[in-house]
Length: 139
Image (cartoon, rainbow, N blue to C red):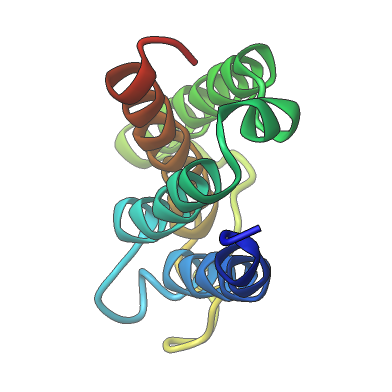
């Protein structure tokens, strides 16, 4: 019963931490931040959830198999996007690509925003998995 205040406060705080991490990811190519910085903030919210609610409750929402699927899909998409951008940028091929857009807008960096999102996913899950492995010996 003494954890009630901590749990109820965390239910309010954790979504705000995650929204801030998403903001950092989405505005990383316009200001300091990006996929890595935003991913660490979101990963910290996952770790806070595990600390407050315990291993059993965290495994219900953040199961190891689900996290590994998401991280593998993100890495594959990252590799395909990065490879495609190298191919069209270095070979001067006239293949379709997103436009540069208006400077200072969120969708102004070609593949930078999707790559930042994918890096944020990989970093946040990796941080959580490392914490889970080092804290209790299992995910």
